[in-house]
Image 1 (cartoon, chains in turn yellow, blue):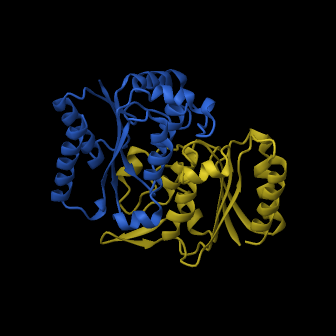
Image 2 (tube, each protein chain N blue to C red):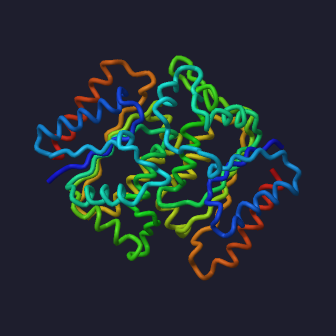
Image 3 (cartoon, rainbow over the protein chains, first blue to last red):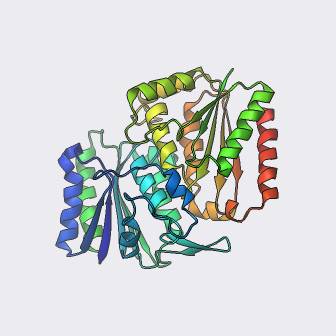
Length: 194
Length: 186
């Protein structure tokens, strides 16, 4: 399966253990992986003035740091997001990627004010997330990141798209070792079985 | 008491910027002492905010008696610029956890003087589509930001839906609604 892997976690935390686990699992299953590392290069998280002015122009990806994201996500069969959730659910870098990449002509088409799906080739949406907070705290906060990536995005991808949320909660607690093992096992299972 | 108005939109001639101008005008007229913080004009960086800027914004926030956020809702949530501002300035770069008072103390102190928080935001799609999408931004303000404010602090949601199909009359009606609702809060 043609996978676009969007990495938004800090590369130096855990010595990149999460990234390595994800990449290893995808490599075992022989997926064709296109890696977008949001910490590499000079990716600007905030929507730019020029980008917003061009938003409805038909050629919205005018900035060099996002110009090639459009064709890359359009070619994907699976979109995988990897991040560590902060207070606002998903890091600003990843929200910036969503804001700036899934623009009209890529993520969706606006015809007479009506929204049409743009990524009908995408049949799998996966978010791999490490939360500082506990499961119940994240549930009560209504998980900004999960809602955007797995629920809002559902309106622009293939209607039969499968969604998976692979999470590790409460990373500061003492009982995390068993949870880590379950997380690693689920990560492997989901990515290998895409 | 002054009101901190945070504007987050990259285009100065946008409708959201016009809404912010209306907010400032209304508050000025009603005695809300507005203080405008335009994140794009100030060149705020949502990923690498420098400590001097963050400290200045925190000082402005703790001195304010009310907070008005003016922003576009993109992908049912807050724009990256505003999430970056909230994480750096309000949360101070850490994760406040409701179950752990020591992690929320700093944010609570910053928000301690607020009498109300108002979100003034535009949505490209209708209310119905936003409900299907999960209204992530609204839930963030209700569930994560508002609980850190003092008990008497009110939260007001002033939303403009369906802006992709809106007419000039709709937009003017929204400006009038913003004016009316804010006057009742001040």
